[in-house]
Length: 438
Image 1 (cartoon, rainbow, N blue to C red):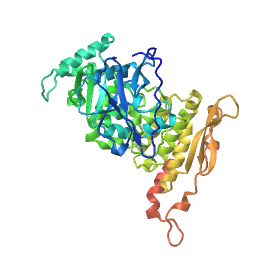
Image 2: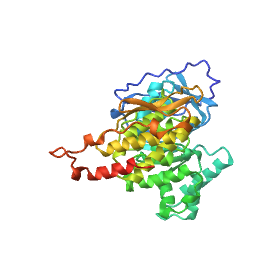
Image 3: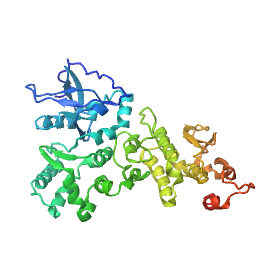
Image 4: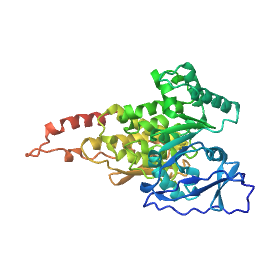
């Protein structure tokens, strides 16, 4: 019911979760009552001891209108799309008593709790028995009704491992839903053990839809959104090619997907890369530039610098640059980013070649000294701070980048004090090649 009614009811006050115990707060949805409103209970569990639950994947939708959910005599205001789901779902006979839904299970007004929950949200979806992908009630614009009709055609298909053009056409229509362009759906789908697509009263296994498209990769070029196409491809690859989690590849595929908060361009994907999942801490108090800096530092502290595949290494550098653009970084910082990244990237790579950890210890932005260009990049290298010139046009590789470490000090030595050629030959060859890059 819209929030302009029941105005005499007080807002629900969440009991804080214990971040040390990594607690979660699933809901128990009550059967429909005479007042026609949605009622539920919120229960708190330590994550490891949580009962079986279903996690919801959905779009939040517009901020207004909003609707009330009743919890222990109080109300929580939610958005329309979630309200329609709860109204539909309370009629379904399901095994699971509990649902995990971010809009209700997380105190959205508590920044610290939101950061902590997002940090291990991937584990929440991975542990869930089922992920329900809610595509709405199919009662809106003509495109929504067409998707519902397509879902009816596909769900009425008699089981067969062979899918024809009609089946693929139905799935392509369903995949045109805006839900599949969401950034958060990536981890929700790739980490789930079982996924059900729910459209009004129809429930379709995600695997059936995927196989209809994946079969001989027919029809995939006809998808309406790049996000849906990539999602289908990665769902097929996650088992057959688990090495796709290597490095920053996942960021290159999905950083253009839609999200409301630009910081989520990083936070929604960190769990899907083996180089970032345990190193980057979610903190919504940080700015976009700070979150991007954390991602770069995370890459530098990983195995990235010692990657022997030069092509993959250069691709990772390019992905990081594109990531900042997708995050909506300020234009003047984007202009100076290429040369800035080249400087710190190659200096750190050279040091890695001689077996040392990266001397890049911090990076970020600071006010420009001329009060004209707003902010400028800085980085700390070997204990000393360097910065990009206030005007990107005046950037000088000779004056702005630090000197290399004396790499000879760190190469294996013979008894007589000479460098061990057998041990250092390969490193030196590659070191010289990088040092003389234009």
